[in-house]
Image (cartoon, rainbow, N blue to C red; front, side, top):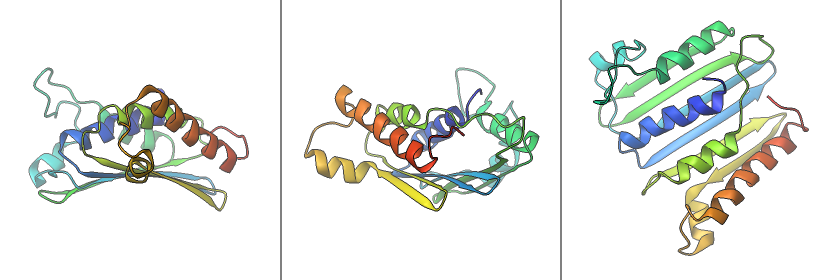
Length: 182
């Protein structure tokens, strides 16, 4: 994938398919290390499936026999001086942790995280998404539950709300980054 935000989208969509009611997405930049953690409380994976989940020919899809999301982010992390870890327990959920060297030439750009979260809002059903961004000693947190409480019944997938969320996330990340792109 060209941007890490697309990996975030793919993995979070897996969480939604796993019937998660809570998905936490944490993006942290400390020094030269970019860490992305996606944690859900979905159905989890068996030890047998977890052992082969990084194989591109392992998928739960019935439409095709290839699943590239997890294998791609693992490869991207390792090629850019980082690491990949996945933990999962049936009935508890799954946590995917990836790290990247910020200045590594092979690290894909972070991309448009606001667009990614906006896209996820169109697929949520009753799932709560909590996105936290931390860099340069500052943090920003977006929580769909807090937004829903503020909106008093207006659906999150209303076009004006979607655009507001995209802009809110990107502006806050831009402020924290001092205008620099990751």
